[in-house]
Image (tube, rainbow, N blue to C red; front, side):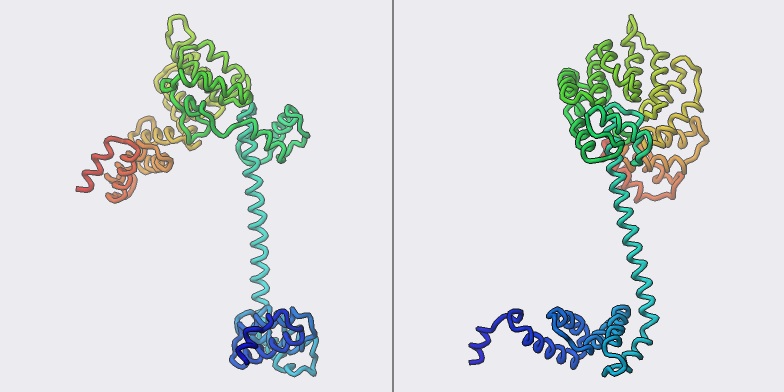
Length: 430
């Protein structure tokens, strides 16, 4: 009979509230008897949730269990509630007051810790909001740079230059002019600039110091010219396609057409356009007999370098050191431009600066500084910098001699197709 009743039993939450209360209080009695403080803490809120009048003693019992489990602040709150309701006539008055005095200092410490945690959480939330805003602004700045605003910084800060560029773009697109980053502006910019295009693959121009341009001599112009022409048609605002199309034309020998295609980017002041034009002059593409025009090339290189174009800075350094263009050799000025490119995190410039410090060419020899620059370039997977850094570890120059570290770097360099590195790997493993 009992088994049959058990099988047909009604779920507890469907029983009358009074019955639920009795069951929970009976369970509470059992938990008190076995000193199950965690169970008591979990059960009492269930009794409160019934919405019935409950004995004030439950607050004391809860406080005692909270204290036993190391929750002094919550225990204090429950004790204050108990004393407020039961007063001096309460059954546990003396125990409650004694316990309140005992845990006061712990409760204060917990309150301070809780306040600190809340403030820390608030600071973290504010920092997360700031980071998200910075990323949004930086994205907009990057897109603005690509659609005709080369002076827009890439800082993530909504400065005057960025606000002015946003306003001009909003006017051009018929958007509400707010000079601020909003969803409508972001969407319009994103629609104007594709993340990637086949033109990038065929005639890509590096837009960041860590990237590498496709050399003009390596451009398959038969494919690149029509593809990049289509890119300009589909995305007429994107300056990189204009420059890449010009480079493809340059590769095909259509030098005058290449210069014409650069006109918008040149007028806007894009360093990559200045560099492209410098290379046209360097190749002799604009002279009658095809003789290199180093003087004109250098003038455009200087303009590109002054716009912080990293590849132009490195090439200008070669001009200055070799005495090309209209200047005598100027090694110190060449070093200045190499450093400028290296400090922009351009791996070839970092490797070149490492070479200078290692060899003492144009700088005082300093193996330790050489290792630092090689490391920076190696961190960006520059093959030869990785090899040279491995050599320093192998020989103990500028760094502590470390054959294990040298082997790791030689293996990395070998994986980056440095032929000489594999021989070093084989030697160290023997």
